Image 1 (spheres, rainbow, N blue to C red):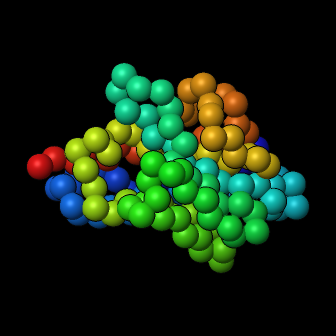
Image 2 (cartoon, rainbow, N blue to C red; image 1 turned 90 degrees about the horizontal axis):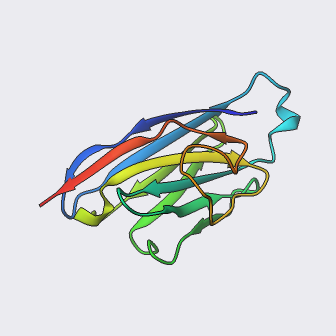
Length: 130
């Protein structure tokens, strides 16, 4: 399994930006997890866990059609950190954001933060106000 540590989040005003970080480490040999994909999900109260985007092991980013144009992903391969850049934030972006890791990141999972995928971060809260 991969251990994921999340940083970032917090409060922002409408139109502002935030960057979330997801660092990943493991006590297992790197070869056993080096080809993991890293994904980001969002849990909004009362809604299902939504896939936001992911970066494949070859560095290719994918972003959900619902967030294209506002959210982007990047990766620091030296530090083993994946970033989720939240731009032009809206109040409906308020929620808890989770990163996850597995050989294949699903666009549909049952619960943010638990199950379905190999590893999950603890989640970080983003609150957007007007």
